[in-house]
Amino acid sequence: MSYALTTLAAALPLASGWSVHSLWMRRRIDAARRDPLTGLWTRDPFEERARKSLTRGQQQAVYVVDLNWFKEINDTFGHTAGDAVLRATGRRFDQWAHDNAGTAGRLGGDEFAALTPVYGTTGTVTGNLLVKLADLLDRLEQPVEFDGQRIDVHASIGVARYWRAGSADLSALLRRADEQMYRAKREGGGFSIAPLFGSAPEFGTVNGRRAGRRGTTGGTEAAA
Image (cartoon, rainbow, N blue to C red; front, top):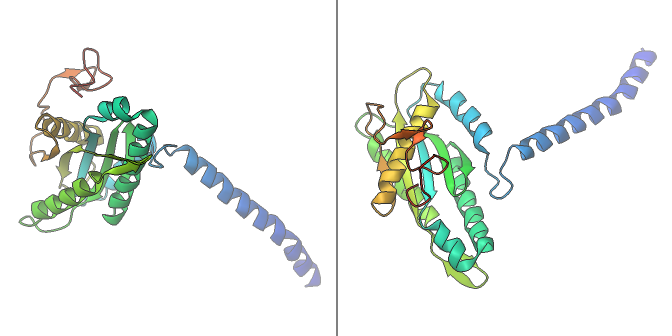
């Protein structure tokens, strides 16, 4: 009995050490998968979490957010000010997603994405989604104070909804949300919701992405 207790006592510090090491490793891995500027998930881990969430069969919505006139912010106030706006946007977006039981990520540049459940009956769910969107837009468009200056922030939000049980195509939902974001941007900002049914792209495709979107051949920064 005493031998067993002695062995257990000797093993406890080792087990504790491994536990601390494992926790440290998980935190290191987690940090490496987050965007260093905003703290949000980068594209790949965001999409992993979003795809897993879509298999639950809940009513859900995918959001794509882009900041309007962000280039003008960099040109007018400098890139350090632009970084401050991105940090503030990431913090606000992350808190909104957390408040709505969702997950958020930074896709790159001034473009962000999120997925949240949307609760309610058929007759009330659209109204609930509109409330979420109005809240998100209000949070994102609060001015950012930087170096004694007030920087106005404006955003465009596109949304694609998913109501059916089973797996869903996240890429298609992001494409539809991206198109709605572009529609809102062309109209000066705000938000736009994709029709519930129908998945045919509204805009042309270049290299598998919306024509005019950043990163496509022939696309332009202004059009994105």
